[in-house]
Length: 444
Image 1 (cartoon, rainbow, N blue to C red):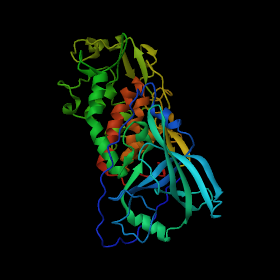
Image 2: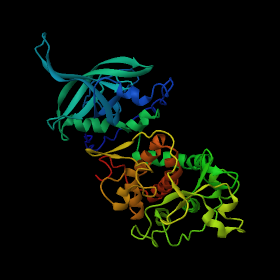
Image 3: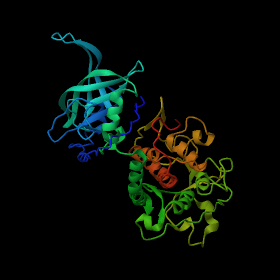
Image 4: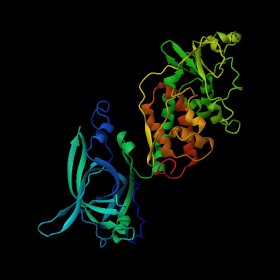
């Protein structure tokens, strides 16, 4: 559900006292392998929805007062959290005060341990009937599950709100800081309150780029031959197309190794069979229609006998398997060895849910799926961003950050092939300054 935003009116000339920064977010004090955060999040009772939350910034007296348009912003301030997660326990119902006869619309919900809610905080939420409700927090109760706290809040409807109402303008004027709640960061055990989506994700991507490259080298750099290989027991797979792609996306100084990555000579004339990796490195020379979309993995490399005497040939290494685009190539065709289980990662696109990535071995197409090469609507988030890159469209740092987070679901084959492409997209998104985070979805 889209967050409801009210445009602020001109602020009074009085100086607003800056609030102190929120305390550093502390992750869970338990074993995340045994108790994943997503399990804890899903265990919070209630139907999950979103709302804008206005947290009181207490005055020197420690009082939390109801919203009062007669108070200046120097006397009453709020921290606004857009898209705060609410887990509705009791839907809205009417309650009558026997003493006064007053009828109130009330409800209750749980919220995660992101802030400490207090009485006279406010919630602004779009309701099922299309109206926007302004709710006042009347009671707070702390609860725990697996050592992680969350809060049960009771609230009552103050009024149905429109942007022209005094209360709407007053909340906007008194919001001295504005944050956005990111559920993915909360699940990852990181601080889920971000100030500005793109700036926050830019900082995250910049911080992760070099460790990502170094981690890739630790996984796949073969010191015995100073090259990138994929080893599985006694098997050693070598993809010269992938190795040729790597210098395009990072330098030797980024890798954490002292020797340059060596690309061994094979019999194949790669000038005849360009692939998606060639298209990504030279968009002016290649198109999707001129590249080879399928490869096969073969063992028994005796067909490279004419390379004897060449010191940089694959014959003088312990490489046992090669990638080829030659459908008639000699040698026994094998499947790429895949280890580990694959957990699906999905991305919300409006009302639709799309995969963040397709498994590399989902079909017999090279690295990316048939959906990518056919340019159909079932392509993943990763493949959609690759198409944006090819078409030189800006891509969002936040979307790329979704891909970075999805690496926890990858197997070795995804790390081997998708990490270099991910690094390319990271660098591209950081250089294109692609607008604000589109919170309606990829194509919204």
